[in-house]
Length: 487
Image (cartoon, rainbow, N blue to C red):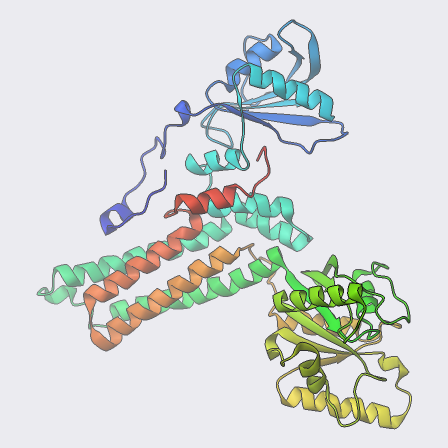
């Protein structure tokens, strides 16, 4: 098991070859590893000390060769055949979990798979909980926490870029970056501890000769580089929640349909057509957008529409990015501006970083005065730090620009070799950066070796949370509990 390391000596210790826990005393677990339903192949996975014996009884065979597929029939206790298929045996510790693992590959289908699983339970296996196979792999040092999370991220990926990034994290690229930083932190702690323990040694006066400061600043720079990469990875994994809001008939539903590439929302000339929130997930320029169309914001006596407007306001408060859509031909009263309209609609002007103004129906601007009016409005928006994009949901004009501006606004520009990341990774990296900043201040301003050492210890602990070197049990339960059964 991974434990919290409080001393420098333990932080430098190398785990013994036997691993962190003795899994031989754990129950043998089993689960269906393929989606239930009609299919050509269905896989049941077993892991644990009794997995091999269960397979022998189930098939009537006396032996299996590791990593060789064996054709078998699977039998009930009375000798009747449940199904037939392949058995794959992976002898521990050379398996996914580090234990003996067997895969029973039969025909797909709910009845056959459930009958086969029930027989496996009769022979002594227990139902695996969500993520239990991956947890055992983590517990037996077959993969670290980042790699374990990458399994779920690869399965849940909503774009090719996200899937590719998850596979790179699964292969250990992200973990390698974190482990390199951990080594740098440990090396820094060695120097600081030496300066504290041997203050009278002339050759160990590292606190004042600039050696530690230089190494510390290099580590800070590296943390910022990894943090920037992780931010892109989080956007790849989670995407952003975008809410379309505005007055009735401004073109919100038409914009949703344009971005989705299909007629997802009903569009009519009747005000109040949209009565409830409508969600759609799309991938544009590599960024996953969780779009929410909302009811038009206005005062109304219609009970159903009022409920829809309340739901719209709830969605607005929860949005990562708010697109205020307005009709350039009618929504701006004389002398009013888009930002004044935003204040009227939302009660207060949202922050510039989460508001993007969409001037819709720009194709209907035919006279010079109207074009001049929208140009003046756009300049006023820009002068106050906001952005406006002119579009036509009817013709599609400006939609590509809208997507580009939206990606730029949230800072999405992933490099080719981006790595998947989660919110907890960003939190740990930010805390690490904060502790390193504290250490830098204690070093350069106060020359306080003990406080520098403590800040570096906290930084190492925060960084170690990412790979699971230091992890609380409740965190592990939350992470692995979100996995699929059978994974």
